[in-house]
Length: 209
Length: 298
Image (cartoon, rainbow over all chains, first blue to last red; front, side):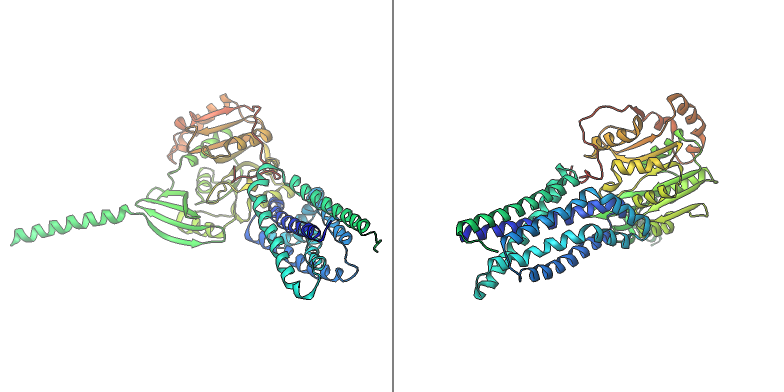
């Protein structure tokens, strides 16, 4: 893979992570509604948890990019993110029930449930942005330009993820089907990244650690 | 001179009449409140007073009454819902989801002074307007819970509460909120019904969800009855339960309820004709679930 395609591939991955973050955030409203309603405080809880998780994700992703950054590790983040979304599809009911039974106030209930369901996957998804910057930047001068392009792509992905999920996906599919699709796409892209990394290592014919 | 004076008095009276008519012909907003959920306002139009919600510039009447005869039912759907009493003539424990002006609660209390009612309303602004402008009565046995209907039902399920009449009448400015349309919600509601209990749901005939709603109710309750005046417009009140009375039994109940309902301006002989038995049918329409409830997109 030449340098240009290599970068396009990273942008594609960043786009997809932006797309899935907002897609899942939107479905969050649906998942919580049967237990906590759909009032403004439910959305407040969801947005708070996503923002908090993303902020931590950015921090951790930046830190992680400091040690031996590689496409392989980048791909691993994607695989983890996908896997951490799985409980949303399979274990959300017991988690929601547990919170519902123990917290009477639906504001704190929805906050706690959002925490339990979305916090971990959102942190991991948040790690992707700074890590992408690290993989794309080759010199100091272009770092701002690269970061700008990356925010552009991933936030554009978020916009489209919100739109596609709320306008169309919920009309065609079950909530769980949409979540599993996001899991699948993230894991698949992660595997691709690892594979591309291997391929490039072979192409350069220099084994890299 | 005298003639002139008389003439001017007559003229004055005449203009005053026209003027006052023009004024009274125009509906007047007497109370407006922006709540967390919608704009709630009360509008007086002559003798008629209505509670309205406005969302996205669309206004819809939620509840109306005649100030001179507060007992008289204004809306057809309220008449239909009260006629559903033929399926459960003496309800003792009632759950009403969606308060509006409190008309149904007031009327049931009037009919059965011993009744216990749990009214559930998400919007505190609606409750205060109902009390202040629509004479909504709360007593030791008629209570109001400010909560999402779905949450109340889930909590009631945990407390093993039972009702012999449940009325679903929750609307936002557009339609019934999505999470109150699903199979899971209906199953939860069903679990609160006594064995001979009846659930009455107010829906729209013109809704794009019509067939999906029918399929969902059929799926949870099997056969049901509907009360509607025409197929394509107005309200459709659904009557469902674990085991519903048969045609013969409701006919004799209608006879019993004729007098009491007449005081509310409900002509049971007329509304009884709108009751249709709807057996469960196989349909291609997808049922609404918590997983699939694109309510406002269909």
